[in-house]
Image (cartoon, rainbow, N blue to C red; front, side, top):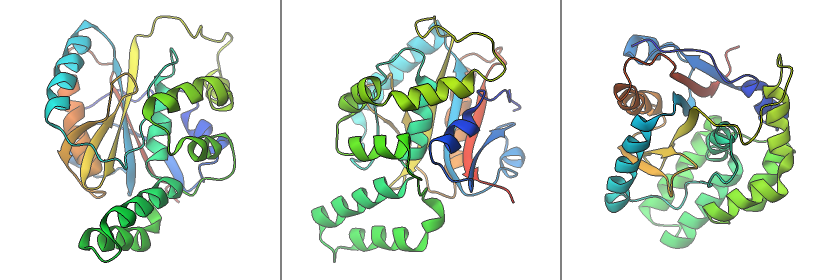
Length: 260
């Protein structure tokens, strides 16, 4: 299965402008078959899907959200924010991708885990071990708008984070608009109808989460691991594509280690 590879303009530069080290990059995923996924650099920290928004997906997402919320368990370690700004789904997907893989969020999750379970519990020891032996899969953000936003909102609820992004974190939105305008002559109206939508996929505590700021909560898609995140997220992306198979305007991007 081959898919489009017209990535959102400026996404890579946007991340680096906000303090993501150059050792991490956004790469196009040119298809969802195993042989194509195998060439994507590792580790993969997050997967982003851009899909054409239509009535087909409105119904699909509403049904999926309703069914999932009744039966799912969501880790409180997942960083999630609601979208309260029009035309900001790409920004929010990038924030979800980075925030759930930063050392700040992982340190808080570690603290909460040890506090809740005790330092000597097997689960706490496993979390501590993972944090110690896999520093390569944590993003150490430099000072800037994104680090400040995560630090300020890390203990807020999703709605509060969304409102904070709107009211007090204009630097993030402005930075994304600036790089998105590269090669354009006119800024898009923030209230202009949107015909595409971004969602992000991350791994947390052995589960695959779909993060969509338009939904009321993260969607737990079941078991995954840092090593199989890309393949497992690809299976969910295929389900999106199956609902509009004649449409060629799907894009998949991965947040990965940079290739030297």
